[in-house]
Length: 238
Image 1: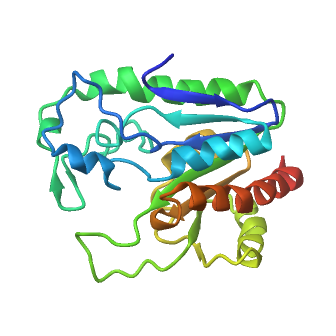
Image 2 (image 1 turned 90 degrees about the vertical axis):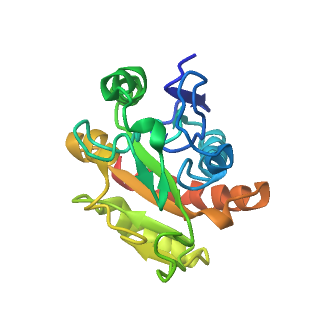
Image 3 (image 1 turned 60 degrees about the vertical axis):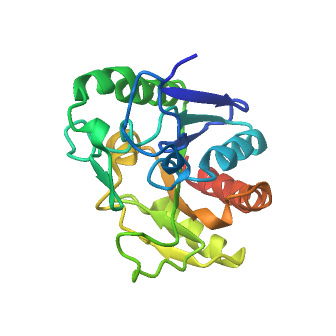
């Protein structure tokens, strides 16, 4: 058992589900200096992602790797030298405990083991396909005027092969789809740049709207919509 990640073993299909921000966990020996209630907020965790990822792993009979700590402890979806690895501010909230934290310690303890696990699982697959699962808040406290009406976003950097397959299928399933929204994968795509685009592995990157996957009904609905679409992408690309 690793504190850096949780592995969900649903089977051996050559799909790997990756969820960087699936956990709100803060280890007992780390003091972020924030109100505990914030750990239920979007700044700490991608709400609904752990549950949807686990349902998909079971439905697709594949494996999933879920980040084991809150992104306030270390952001697993950042390059090794990115300034946002150890956030001192998030959506208007100060994270005072990170001001003097040991970045190298957190990298060695969480970031490196997580990404090494992802790499090992992909290396064991003859022809892998990746599903990257995130969720986004419908409103930002620091920018309340910004409208985020999409049900789901599809993100990518240079490799948009799966996106082009998935977007019309998601729309046909009745979802309002953002293409490179609520933000662009060309700006923030670190985990997929590293494991997918950097190795020529096809992938689909999705951002579900948190209020739509905040309970079991919504999570089951999204897993049911996503499973056949992910399988179609994999069958055409992997």
